[in-house]
Image (tube, rainbow, N blue to C red; front, side, top):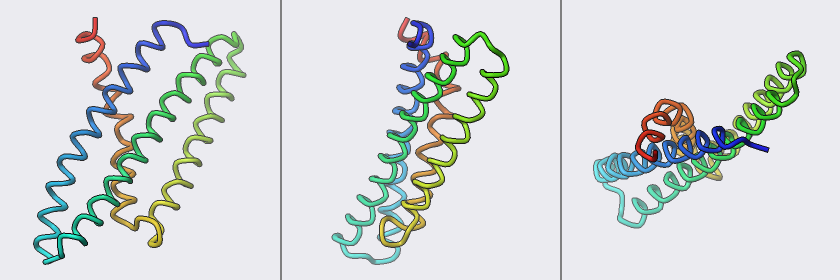
Length: 145
């Protein structure tokens, strides 16, 4: 369904998102350790806090990959349809579906019983990897080629 150029771009964007999320993980661990020390939390509480928030980063990365793949399929369908009206409607509908899915997952993550506000922020930051990967994709594509 996806042509080779779109597959290559998708692969580069996933790599870019992965690199962004690795940097996010490292920076957030450093910040969380400093934060927990300033609050005099025990090592167990610190570990639980860090792990819960890093799980949110992982969930955000997975959502980013699913979103990127969904965008690629949506774009491929729109291009192959050869109908401008259908293409516009399909792309708009799929965009709304992705946004609603993101909001539902964010509400679940931000719930105090699951991960809380900090987890929600980490989830949102992790999903921003899609934006960063769009800028990194040409650079990564040059490196791979």
